[in-house]
Length: 189
Image 1 (cartoon, helix red, strand yellow):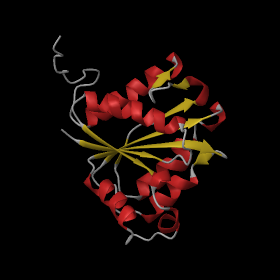
Image 2: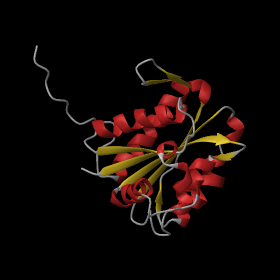
Image 3: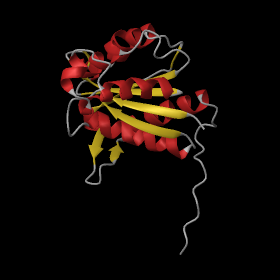
């Protein structure tokens, strides 16, 4: 069982990106892996912006990255790039923070014109943090994500297959067979 950290770079309290990451985290957990979420928006802004790694919450966020076997990074796309909140977190990580880790980048946005933000904006920054294993990411249009009242997300068919494929790639990299969820315990009647 691998430990997977999901990192939401969205500054929004009602984030489609965070909902997508919960969905992906659930799918990864179904394959038997332990998933821990991290939302940049929940970190204290002063220490985050000043890169104060002595702050307990910032120190724990850095430690969470260090403990993870894989990291799923999710970000909304603003102005043709990944979020500044995510960049702020990535900037305070040690240069080798992602060494030996598999990374799956995901992005959400309002226009297909921003689909290359993963490859031209986010991928180079992730690579600079030491990973040699950045999986092919996936971009999901906002209109293909519906947040449900219970916090879950419904993906339109246009997005669902791409996300399923991304989760399968991650599962393969972690040594799990793709498309085969972990067995669920029987429920007593």
